[in-house]
Image 1 (cartoon, rainbow, N blue to C red):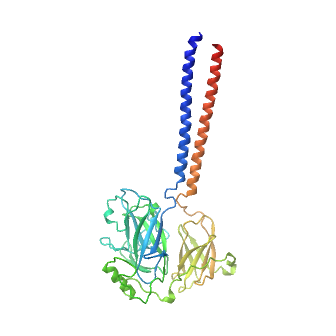
Image 2 (image 1 turned 45 degrees about the vertical axis):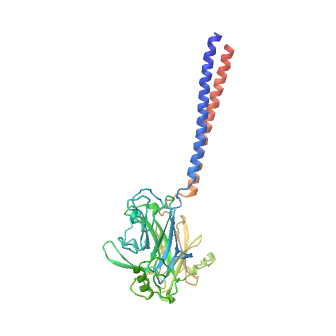
Image 3 (image 1 turned 30 degrees about the vertical axis):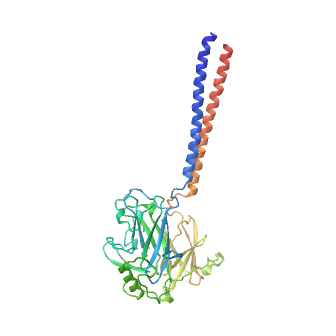
Length: 404
């Protein structure tokens, strides 16, 4: 009996050893998977959203501005965009005005919710750019180059000046004066493709850059321009029919950013008559006492952010774009004059507005921590099972030894 029991015991021991080794490998696999999951979720893949920076050609110190009298060539760089290899289309880069619901993904309509400078699609000169996905079937038409795999691109965009003409969907003509409303660079999905992750708006402010007493020709501030562009420059310099009227120097937009208002200056007697309607991306501000001939600047506080200079329309209304990183809750809107003096203030609440869809790095880190914690719990559970099986098998082996 002793001899017949030993082979069966050894067989059970070998079987138990295989089980233990398998469970140990499972634990190692869980730990490795947890490390990989933590690393992958901690990397924000283009989580911050698309960002555009524009500098005046040849003047990298002049950021997100254009000349208030003449055509300006901007070196425009983008990052954080979503690139799709061999995908259809890419992005359009446009200069113009964006209303509250300007985004194509939100139903925004050309000529109504967004108004921008058009270009000749058959012979574009740089007023509109097409940045193509690499390998797209329409890549041949990419006058703005390619959208790199890492979400970056670079191109040159022509801004005709602070005023421009546009057409709505019915072909009706209109004009926009960027000295009276905020204009900027828009990026949208190309060829009718609505791509929310590639939609962005970057404000461009106008200021005196060129010497207005110097005649601008084809070589002034740009390189390799066509004769048509040179002619447009000359027309603008002479106040001609390029769609850009040279503003009076005394009426020019203030060239400086005022200092942030002192919260102590926000007293009841400084409230003025500001009224605010909150939208998803901007505020509609009404000031019945606003002087239509004077410039007004706005700060969004608590963390003071200057939104730019503007003039009211005939109804005393301003469009004030909200900062991209504004949080839900109550904030202050402060109006200042060209000297930086507070002319009015009020409060507004962004609670309940459409939340931003981008995933932040903090959220990614939080998700990674949850995955790691779940994997750790699973590994502990498997280890506990291993220990339990080991104890049971050892006790059984001891009993069998005694019986033998």
